[in-house]
Image (tube, rainbow, N blue to C red):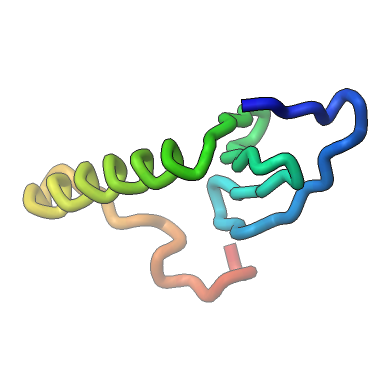
Length: 81
């Protein structure tokens, strides 16, 4: 996975943003998950695998309702947090 932001050749496009993280795509094809000061880089297949893993974990947690706290921002309209 080649990614060269130091050379200034990659242009980023914000694909999505939430309260905790943002997802960006570079013109070189790298997809970045940005969480505060941490950035993880993925190719498309790895990002799909991460999404499936997180979805499975959330489904498992929902099956154990006492283990899943209610998200603070779940009932707030976007921009109100």
